[in-house]
Figure (cartoon, rainbow, N blue to C red):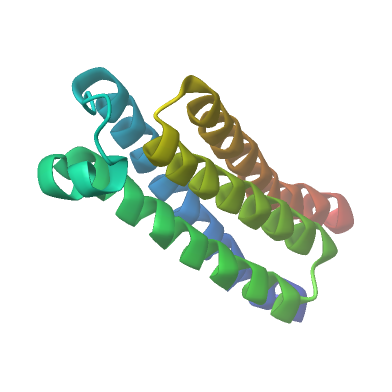
Length: 146
């Protein structure tokens, strides 16, 4: 089977996006567990308390940081592949992940519900962006093959 250059350049991007989606699911599960199982004492410094008492939230922070690294890699790969849809999805995904990460940081500082909601919305937006970035190139390739 003949694989054109664009398909070959898109393969690393799509693999990175797939890995990112898997990490997003893991991040979601950790976030739900943290929400259900962890109670940061009122008045405590959230960051200090987490790193002394909550492995679940620590993992949530580490995966969140890893997601930003993966998002940067996906963006670079989409640019190398010269794929506009992939680049738009990667920029949106990265921006939404940074928004979610900063909202999570604000949540640890303030321990209020608003930043938690913004973190969840950033996650959902990034998930949708990466799903579209993964599937739209397939749809486009199928249309071009017809």
